[in-house]
Length: 334
Image (tube, rainbow, N blue to C red; front, side, top):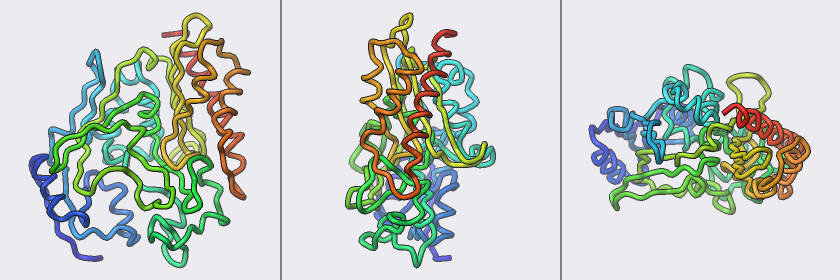
């Protein structure tokens, strides 16, 4: 174990200053469910840890607002998933948390930290002798031409095909969430759709956050489409597994006509992926099993598959279609 400095500030500004003082070699520690693993694997070797667990102001959340839902970045996944308002009015958000990880992890993990979890690519985590551009820029990507069954088919590049592993960010993408951050330069707001980068030629740069920037809250605009929503996750086993394909879907339906459709994908892309072409294809028409399937297929027209993950095109299309029909059923009962 490498030695590192440790700070446990009592205020947000003190935390930001501690990050700035050790930047770019500092890391934030909250629930620790990802960072500790990466340190044990020698993937992360921070010179300083800034423990934000005492920042009580970031642990609260409020789902009673008439304009937006507000989640402190330090709120626990399990607490938010259990919120009755969220379960009734935004089931896709609650389900994305219930279907993530294990109860033990959800009781520790924070919703802000969950957004920043790194890939579960076995080559990234396996270390030498496997080349990985995320771990060591310029070394190559062992997953390309390797065992790529769980890897991305959307948003990939010749440098990286690692899939974004999270569920919560996918559901947030469907609802146009925004993040508020603080740094020594002040505050800024980041649309969730802009937080994660596609790999391009620099896959080691995963988000647009600066090294001294701290997420303090997540805000979700209130929408009636939340009631007719779902997070549909397909995986190899029923619990404690990452998605092979997932879809966060929300609908606003007038009679049999779709007035609004929101579709975000997980398990198939290098970042949370909004399927806007599929959304537009549904607008103004009746939602049937046929139109749902067509929308699902449209979402994967730009897919680039490898040797073992071609099945994700069909699986992803079916996942979207099933999620749309689940959301339609909820629209009728809301």
